[in-house]
Length: 200
Figure 1 (tube, helix red, strand yellow):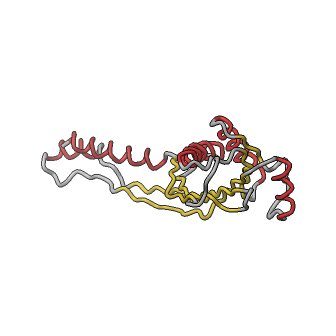
Figure 2 (cartoon, rainbow, N blue to C red):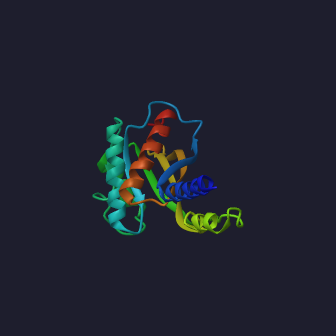
Figure 3 (cartoon, rainbow, N blue to C red):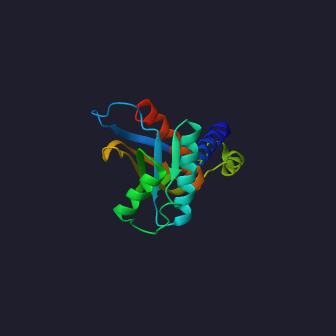
């Protein structure tokens, strides 16, 4: 009986550890079937965010990941330091100054709060008398309630030679630790898929 209770406690602890871990997954992606020719080689990265510090961290991290994979990248914030929505003419100027043939725009579509309840464990009845029951009280596990956020993120790659979207992906990140970690996870997933789809 004690072994069974200890096993139940271990499963609850494992569930809590897994729920607390940050993870980012690519839920779906689309590629323009009419896209042909050489992959895009110079990407202007734009992060849509109300926080300028988060935008800078994201754009710098994504550019670094692109360059590590042999793709030239440029962060948009030095060229477009404005807050909020940026006029099209300013973006057009930034694309020209960066000599970019592509623009990657990433934004958070929504944030969902998820609540999970893990049942507890209590020794059943009094099968071993007082002393057996007393020992079991120390391995009883109360119910656990865990709350965490799930971010849904959309990333779209535009071919600026024709001003046409050629690739798009929707990702989910569970309880991201910070913008730097989230950017690293997201960049790894997206760049790998875009390279596999031969748009980069």
